[in-house]
Amino acid sequence: MENVFDYEDIQLIPAKCIVESRSACDTSVTLGGHTFRLPVVPANMQTIIDENIAKTLAKDNYFYIMHRFEPETRIAFIKDMQATNYIASISVGVKEEEYRFIDTLKAEELIPEFITIDIAHGHSNQVIRMIQYIKEHLPTSFVIAGNVGTPEAVRELEHAGADATKVGIGPGKVCITKVKTGFGTGGWQLAALRWCAKAASKPVIADGGIRTHGDIAKSIRFGASMVMIGSLFAGHAESPGETIEVDGKRYKEYFGSASEFQKGEKKNVEGKKMHVEYRGALKDTLTEMEQDLQSSISYAGGDQLLAIRNVDYVVVKNSIFNGDKVY
Ligand SMILES: NC(=O)C1=CN([C@@H]2O[C@H](COP(=O)(O)OP(=O)(O)OC[C@H]3O[C@@H](n4cnc5c(N)ncnc54)[C@H](OP(=O)(O)O)[C@@H]3O)[C@@H](O)[C@H]2O)C=CC1
Ligand SMILES: Nc1nc2c(ncn2[C@@H]2O[C@H](COP(=O)(O)O)[C@@H](O)[C@H]2O)c(=O)[nH]1
Image (cartoon, rainbow, N blue to C red; front, side, top):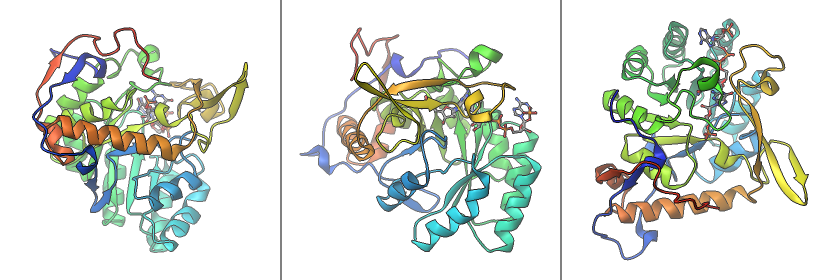
């Protein structure tokens, strides 16, 4: 791979504006036959999403993916969401008990609208088998499979039946895969996204490494249909992580799904725990993200999200911060 770059190395080039107000720009995106307000989904991690947040997001027409770390609650969760006419969007792993879970869903005719196969190294026969099993038994569920970091992986998972693939091995804020194993897309996630998206014939979700709202527009430019975000969502009042106070300042806990804190043991640890600054209400961040993305669309010279896909860009290594902090 040549010409690798990451989010902070890119600036998108403006095109002539066609709207009279940023509010005329439409940030919505359609995935799996459902239209959502933003091309953004909070990470399916235990310190990012819980049932209350899932309900709030679904009610306000944002996409969500529930995590898989309380597996025994998933059936009740699906029933509860569907009883209130919200989409049911859950995660699964690949171990034997997950096959029995799919069998139960089929037997009870409980069909989640979205199922995400959430595995660190998604380019594997285990994931391919699970995609095929879900597609055989719950053919109308939209299957998101990942995570991957190569065009070959995208093609194989799509070929197995995945309706979308998730790209990002190791760019996450609480990820230590890159240091523990030497592998990943950390530091060149945006270039990896471009590489993978060029090979994709179905939607690609960019996962990890988003540090500013402008990175959402950059992901769309380089081929993502949606972005998955952890750290930027970890600091809210509603976030499930513990709140702590240090010198009068509040922080929220954020830990990796492959961290010792999640696993309860020190085995194959590829994630860490940190604290992020408290950011207030989730709805305020979502509103700000929407406004910033509307502005991105206006700079792209359009009024629809995909106008961003057509803009030119420059690579200016490590340019955007100039030593400044965003917040
Ligand atoms: N996006 C990313 O960069 C990363 C994300 N994560 C997150 O951490 C969580 C845990 O992930 P994961 O460990 O996959 O899930 P699980 O712990 O559920 O493991 C799933 C199965 O895959 C096996 N497995 C896991 N990694 C490998 C590998 N590298 N080679 C062969 N087999 C493997 C495991 O066996 P065994 O444990 O015995 O190997 C287990 O049987 C997920 O939520 C994932 O999204 C973790 C790392 C990177
Ligand atoms: N290598 C690891 N990656 C992890 C772990 N837990 C989650 N993740 C990935 O990070 C993103 C979120 O990234 P962020 O930069 O927005 O914070 C998440 O969606 C997962 O793909 C982990 O323990 N290790």
